[in-house]
Amino acid sequence: MLALPALCGPQLLDHSAASLFRLLLLAPLLEEWIMRAGLQEWLMRRRLHAALVLGVPALAFSLLHVASGWQAMVAVLLPGLAFGLVYRRWRDWRLCALVHALCNGFALSFCSFSTY
Figure 1: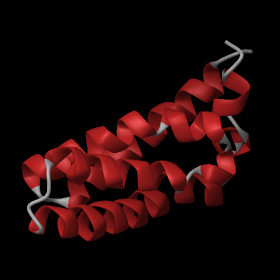
Figure 2 (figure 1 turned 180 degrees about the vertical axis):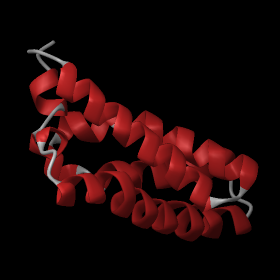
Figure 3 (figure 1 turned 30 degrees about the vertical axis):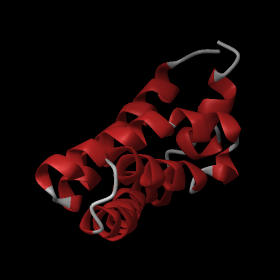
Figure 4 (figure 1 turned 90 degrees about the horizontal axis):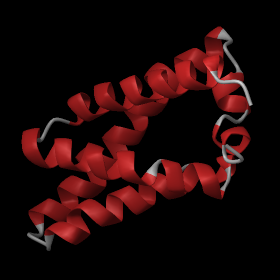
């Protein structure tokens, strides 16, 4: 319960149009294009071990969230791995962006309705 304030930071509590645009469209598209179509695809083409192909982009994805604090970085690590698995299976970064946007939508809903 103590982690909720850190996880539900100002970005997830701001429901302005600009914030919703950023969280539900812009960030998922840009982050997944860079992480999956860029970094993960590059690693996959080098036929590296699956742990590296999935782990390096997930760690890089986590580092993208450093401004939100270490709790947020830890919280996005597993979704980053999941997005990597989606990309590995279907090789479509847009599908990853859709799943990412759905996760952000869930986080927005969770933080909006949680009381702490």
